[in-house]
Amino acid sequence: MHQSVLAEEILHALATELPQPATGWCVDATLGLGGHSERVLTSFPQLSVLGLDQDPAALKLAGARLASFGARVRLRHARASGLAQAVRVEGVAPVMAVLLDLGVSSMQLDQPERGFSFQADGPLDMRMDPTRTATAAQIVNGWSESELADLFYYEGGETRSRGIAKAIVEARRNAPFTRTLPLADLIARVAGRGPRGGKIHPATLCFQALRRAVNEEGEELRLALESACEVLAPGGLLAVISFHSGEDVFVKQRFAEGERAGELERIGKGAIEPSREECRTTPRARSAKLRIARRLEQAPGQQVREGGAA
Image 1: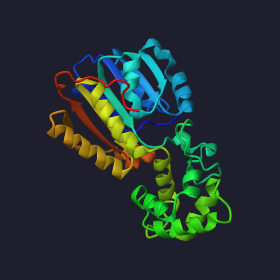
Image 2: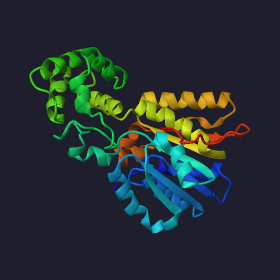
Image 3: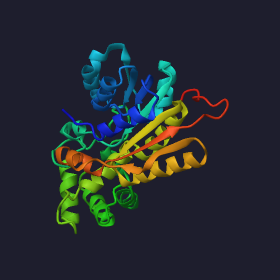
Image 4: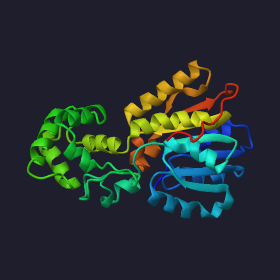
């Protein structure tokens, strides 16, 4: 079973920062396999969960996992950016917590047919939400050399982005890229193992950048944070787990802006990181950072916008 990262730290925040017994709703806007929600429902018997996910396969598995909680759970196929609309449609209130666990799940990585992994051959897809139209193949085969280079550098942090982009454009003239392994092999040939001695696969950063572009993860995060601030009741908590340094910086800046505007109050002095023990048992936790903020009193007349964030 997939292990939810920083779950104990989230439960601690709910127990210490919310009035007890905690009542109302928690919106798990990135439900995944339901691990965080299961822990919340078990630990706080008077809290209910509205679970959202853009991946229908994850929703199905989470639904089975959370079925025993009955009417305390509602699930919807929705992106995190649409959480305000989901709250309005479902009519749940008060919302006392919103959880965002960003990035790709181990379940998605472990399914070659989803196209996220560079370690197993599959279609060059990478869509978390199958209703999206753009795929990784369309980006790899359709973007210009400069666009690909900028994508790999700014979204993946790949310092050898220009050489990789040039090689991709030259190779696709003979045949378009449709599978993950041929692309990963080309990147490995161009990039080599690099200065870190091969601690990560050479294609890791480029595949991360492609995934972020396909799923518009930067814009999704921006809209999700805005939506969360709309729906949270005064005193409610917004908890965000990020695995990408750029995302963590964005969350930090958004929380700081909210604090200056009198909208949010940051909980703690900075990001919460997993314990050594959690990193040992759950390797994907190593890059995780958790930031938490409290929603302050809303301005007079402020309410969820009709339709929410799209």
